[in-house]
Length: 263
Image (cartoon, rainbow, N blue to C red; front, side, top):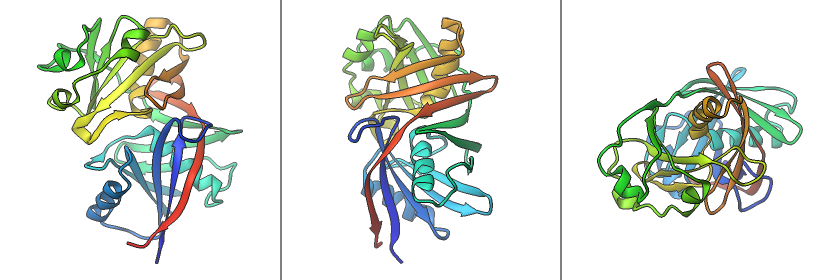
């Protein structure tokens, strides 16, 4: 049977911006190799596979090269697809079973809110290659569960960064998030995310990184609700709210491709 697959631009309300994710709604179990092959074929930063299990949904995420433990934009895209195709009632919150535990999504008008774990970054020494690969001098370096977090001295420094991607791939982490206080009116902080280690040279908008960025900047800015901009070429807006050991991630999504797979 053909398998439906949808490409959604997440953390945006305009096509061809934000972060594209492929969403594959399964009717039965499929093996890991097949899912990895589909993700490689789609060649997007993430492909999500979702399967109904009673009142919950089993959700997995794959880059073109690896399965990952946590992905924000593909979760937002998945929730959008389930509501948009009437696979889930629009007023019903969604519960996802994942490798990072149970995650939730709810809809408020055109905005989707994700309930994710807060990831606390601890101060760390810059690992070998990091500073040279970025070509920038950090104000601070920290490490959380998946990635290194590097603070630079200005929004301009983040936007102008041209890292050596091949060298950055040698840093032992899922990826590297680079951030600074925002000077663009209306935003609190900006970031970019590089993950060549995971087959993604630069991710357009990274929800999971904001699980660490939100508590990091909440402590420094003295506020729990903030508006963030990920300054990739496509760009994306992420609303964040720190609530104890959880981070709420808010954003919009738009469907750009609907189709079926025959493999």
